[in-house]
Amino acid sequence: MITDVPDAELASTYATLVASIREAWSPLAAADKVVAPWGPCTALDAARGFTVETITHGWDLAVATGQPSDAPNGIADRCLSYAVAVIPDRLRGVMYDAPVIGGKTSSTTEQLAHLLGHKRHRR
Image 1 (spheres, rainbow, N blue to C red):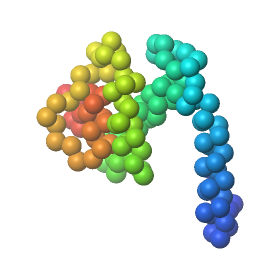
Image 2: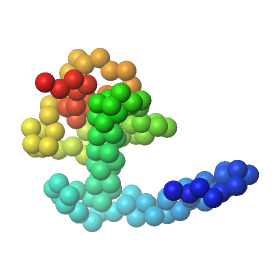
Image 3: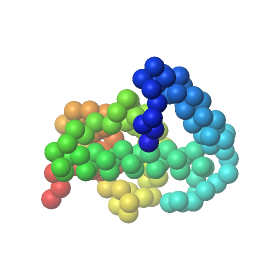
Image 4: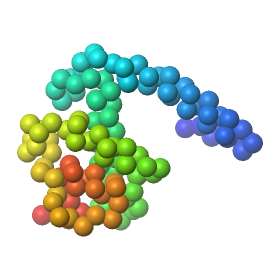
């Protein structure tokens, strides 16, 4: 966590950090190396999968504790756009439940959770 940046330098520090993160992630975007956290996939798909997991389990915890449950700044929108591609059907019933169909959703974060089979109320 960065806490020692003067207010006047927040924007420029943020821009520098964004450039740094993009540079670190750019090899993943072109990666064809196969990694295997849950089966063969590219490094980019693994990173996307872990992001989807983090957002979805964050939603679970927020809902369970009565906290705000929406992911910040459109992260869930990006996750939802590629979640179908990074969640193999062969893992349904193993790591993921069937998608929640017809569930009333209030946000993209909740839509993502429903795609992974997560519900507000578990029985």
